[in-house]
Image (cartoon, rainbow, N blue to C red; front, side, top):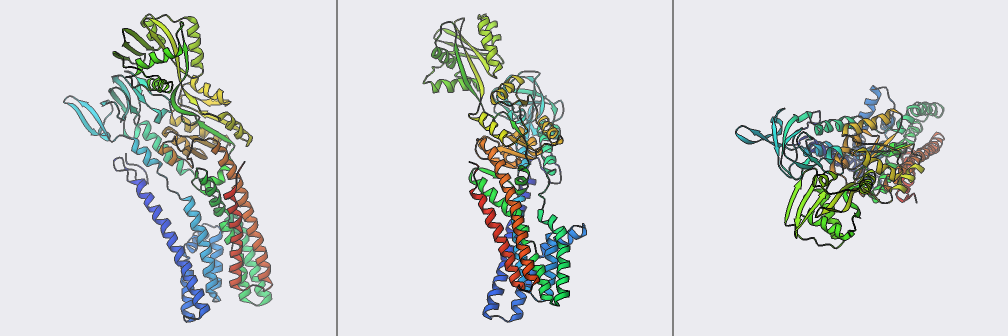
Length: 639
C-alpha cells in the first residue's frame, strides 16, 4: 500500500518515521541558530564595552548576527511577492535602515527577539504526529491463503479477490471478506467500536485489522490492500489532517495597516528634525516584536498549565480553535463507558440463591474464552467464590455453554438455548430479560438439571460521575452534545438516556462517524470529537478539535487527536475548553500591551529621547510584559 506525498510504505512504514526525524532535526537546528545569534551579540556588546577588540571586528560580529536573520528576510520577500504585509517585512525594513546608519548591535538585537518568537511558535505548532503510521501497523503483513497444494503464507498485497484466507485464534484478520467456514468471537472494536467481541459464523462479514479471538476462520476475500475498511481509514486521516488550517497571525493583520503608517511617521520625523538616526529609531521601536510573541507565548502558558493536569495540547492552532467550540461529540465505548463487559445484575429464579447462581455459572464458564465468560469469572472472584473445574465443557457458538459437574448438567446462554433443551422460561422471566436488554445488557440464562435457576446481566458500564460532567459542559454554552457508537441502537440509547444525552447515533462505521462530524461542521458548529479507539481516528482528525482519551485510548487515536487526555476523567474536556478561552483572553491582552509599548516608544522616539539601542531595549520591555502576562496562565484554575 504505497501512497501519497508522505511516502507511505506497507512493509517498512518508511514515511512517518522519516518525517519525524526531519522535524526533530529542524527544531534542534533552530535552537543552535538562535544560540549562535545570541552569542554573537553578547560577545559584540561585551567586547565593545571593554574595548578588547577593534571596533571593526565588533561591528563585524553584530553584522554577522544581522545576516543570520535570513529566515526573516526570506519570509519578508515571500510575503511581499504574495502582496502581504507582515512582521517579517516590517523587521526587514527596520534592519536595512539600522545597518545603513551603522546601528549594527541594535539591528542584531531585534533579529534575536524576532527569531526567538518565530522558533518558539514553530516548535509548538509543528509537532509531528504518527497517526498514519499507527494505522498502517494494524494491518497484518502476511496472510495464510488456502491453495490446492495446502496452506501458503504470502504477502498480504498478493492476496486476490475471492481467495480463501485462513485466520487462526489470536491472529489479526488481513482482509475484508465473509466467513465461509468456522466459528469464532472477533474483537472488531478497532473498526466498529463495538464494546464486546462479535460471534462470527459462516456468512458474516469481517474486517482487516480486527482480532480473531477463539476459533479458526476461513474467509473469502472481498477487499484487499487499499480497498479495505482499515486502508480507507488511513486515507480519511490523511485527508482530514490536510484540511487543518494554520493559526492566524494576529500581528501580521495588525502590521498590514501599521507598517505604512510608521513609514510615513518616520519620514515626517526626518523631514522636520533632519535626524536620520531619530527616523531609524522610530522604525526600531515600532518593530512589532511583542506582537510577534503575543500569541505563541500565551500558547506556551496554556500548554504548560494543561500539561501539569495531564492534558497534552498539540499546538497553538488548537488553543485558538477551542475557545470557539459550541458542540461536543463523544464516542461511546471506552470514552463514556469502560469498554469492558461487567456483571451488573444477578437475578435468582425458582427459589435459588444469588450465590448459587453465580457459582453455577462460574463452573460452566471456567474454560470458556468468551469475554462474557471472563466477566462472570471476575464477578465470582470478587465475591470470593472459588469455582471447581467442570467435568465436561462444550461451547455452542452464538447460543452459550453446556457443562457437566458432579452429575449435574449446567446450561448458560440464550433463550434459544433454553428452548432447544426444553428448559421452561416463564413470561415473567422473559419480561425481566426484555427490561434488562432495554438498558443495554446482554442477559445470560443459567439452568441446572433442567430448571432455570437465574439470570445474569452483563453490559458495558457507564463511567461514574459523567452526568454531572455533561451538565458542566452545557454550562459552558455548548449548543449540542452528541454520542456516536458502533453498538446497536438499544445499547446506545440506554447509555445516552442514562447520561441525559438526547442526540445519539448507533451502528456507525468509521466513515459514518466522519460524515456525522462533517455535517455538524457544515451546519456552522465548531466541533470537539472525544474518542479513544482506533475506529475514532478519522473522526478525531475530521473534527475542528480531536480529543483522545489517553489511558484507555489506542496509540493511533492519541496521535491523531489535537488534544490527548492522559487520564480517563472527562472533566478534562470541560477544563481544556475553559483554559483555551482564558488563553485567548491573554492573547488579546498581550496585543493591547504591545500596542501600548509601541505608543510610548513612538512618542519618545519622535521627540528624540531614544537612541537606537534604547529603542531595542524598550522593545524588549514590551516582550517582557507579554511574557509575564502569559505566565499567569500557568496558575489558572477553573475552580
